[in-house]
Each structure stands twice: as C-alpha cells, then as structure tokens.
Amino acid sequence: MKLQYRDMSGANPQPSPSERRRTPRLPAPERRELLLDAALEVAEERGFGATTIDAVARAGGVTRPVVYDLFGDRDGLLLAMIDRSAARALDAVAAAVPGDPAGHEPEAVLVDGVRAFLEAVVRDPATWRLVLLPPAGSPPALRERIAAGRAAVAARIAALLEWGLAARGGPAGLDHEVLAH
Image 1 (tube, one colour):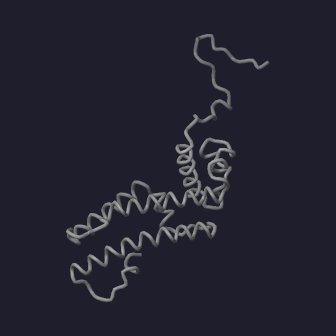
Image 2: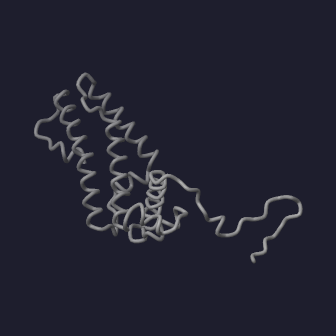
Image 3: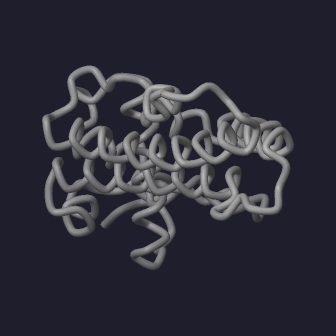
C-alpha cells in the first residue's frame, strides 16, 4: 500500500514525479506538430546527430513509443521535420512574392517581398536556419529534401527576377537562377 502525504491545511498534496511528467492527451495532429517543434529545437541546439527519438521524446514530454507511433523511425521524424520546414519556407515566399506580378510595379514587389521575407525569418528563425544553412551531420535523404526545397524557393524568385528585369529593361543575359540564390 502506498502512503500519501496529506496536508492538513486542505491544500492538495504534491504530485508524484510520474504525475508531474505526464503531458495532456492531444489529438495526433497536434501532438505531431509539438514533436516536430521539439525535433527542430533539438536539431538546432545539438545538431542532427543528436536528434534521436529519445531526445525528441524527452524534449516533447512524451515516451519514445509516442514518437515511433507518429513517425515510424528517426528517418521518418527527420524527413517530416524537413518537409514541414520546407513547406513553411515556401508558404512564406509565396506570401512575399505575388504569383502573377503583372500589374505591380517591380520596385514595390521587390521592397514588399524583401520586407515580408525578413519578417518571416524573424518570426520563425529555426525554420529558416534549417532551410538556408547546410545541415551538418544530416543523412543524405534530408540533404536531398533540403536541396529540393531550396530549388523550389529559388525557382520562384528567379521567375520574379526575370519579370522584374524585363519590365525595367535590366541587363540581358543574366542568370536568374544564380541571382535567385
């Protein structure tokens, strides 16, 4: 029989260590987002090599089986983290750069786009560090996903540069893809 301390003042007793560590039950999509946040935090603080199922479970306040249930394995977790970061980056670029700039002044599109991009970076620096900086110690599949995300962002910017330079009579023969990078 487990004895429990009873505070005679009527206050609730201190929770046991196992009760303190429990996290509330969340729907799988919410739990998944929280664990992806935890994975990104671990990767940013300690690197990809340290981004293990155990480290993410601890950072997310769950047990390892919860992480395995949502992501399958470490590679699944890391790929989901990269995919989410790439999607966030592309969404930010899409919001910053009009899909069809016709009817806009190139200078205004440039200024507004740079401002929106910088605001996105300030709002979510961890995502942008992951997308823009070389991820040391990351597996090849992750590097491929990051490269694909970077290429998608660069393609969007290259198209905008091509339009803006043509609209303003910019120099001919520029490599818009290089400029976009």
